[in-house]
Length: 552
Image (cartoon, rainbow, N blue to C red; front, side, top):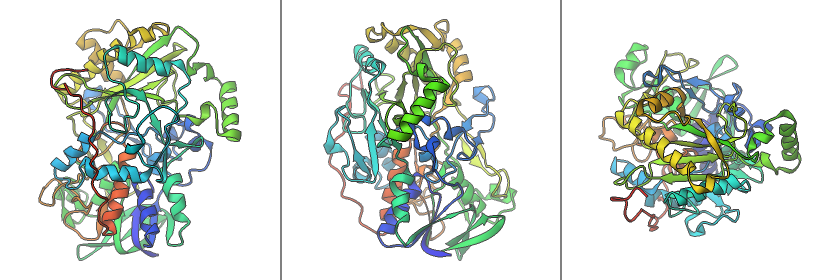
């Protein structure tokens, strides 16, 4: 089989590229190991904890023991299904802060500043405010990706926003618009009650084109002829098969699997490849390095009033919610329940937010395990820009074997200072008048834990990944020895090969990574097609006028 472009991975960026390239008339084959996303456990937003913990849909990766977190092996879910991680994630939609992308440009990702990427965010969106405010001028109106907001009917959602303001923080009615900083409604990739994954938004429309097809199989390696990528070998039904690319191969396999495939194909640190008997095509020491993620802690409160989602945490209620959703696509099943959020700065002198909050009107973990206390609520909180860096390396030259993933979480003293500050600032928010009718007592960390050492022990035991790995095929200038791709997403040192997914982020962005990953797919599509980039935006983002001297 052959096509103009072979895309490896039907995830957030891969689906976007399949749509844009095939719409432009190019022939496209998408190679994806995972299967169908049909069925309520993926499509029902409220069921989000299920697909993330199912072998059918998740690669099931775990980190190597993390020395600064008590040797824990941390879960690293990655989507093994069409739509990739957009089919198993929490559906939270965050573009990232303007200054994140300006930093990318400063680090050598020329043409990826905020003014460059904002037009692509607008192109990919159809935005629905659900009556919760926001400025339409900053948002898209006719893109494939529907972005919406939950109903925010539970009084706890408003209490969280009110408490933030009472504590002296800003309010924002659209953190994806001009002003990220502050407390306000959270956005979700949900449309008409269904998860609006990259598969629903982009891949299904793409596959309606006669020039786009989907092939199921496990990518083994990229085929090169004279330093040029010309195809991909893959396993299907125990047989090795080949896809040929007339123009280019594009890897969009995630921050874990993209560097793995590059290294299996002979692109990576030469000494590491030699260890595994892999012939070196291009010595790129940055492949697999620069691994970043967000860690978070759940600060949980017991509720005085029986108004939390705990009342639905029983088989009878779940069955009713599921039935209502199946027949109407409405009710509790139609939201991810993340309906209020905040982005704040940790201290004076920080120019833009470095702490994110997800608020949830139930005390529960990502794996679906409920807090023992019964009725409760929680804020997921964590620092946005940790200085810790890890890596992805090969365990062997066998494509079927999982790579070694080492995040090196909490390896910087600053990480600990930042996390303690997160906990103390959150406690202050929950102590405001807006929460007085609701807060019974603190479940986690627990009011008794006050000293730095006690908080550190809690962080060491309970901090969880927010599942935002990125950075392992870093974008930069061609002369940068640690860059893997140039600003056109071309792999440095070879021809005919690009990488386009969260692995190319020079540094992690504020918030959840699905939105910027799709944006990367949108923008790289134009680079692949040789199109002139969309005109730069002139919109000026809001920065706190007194950020140098005030924390809020």
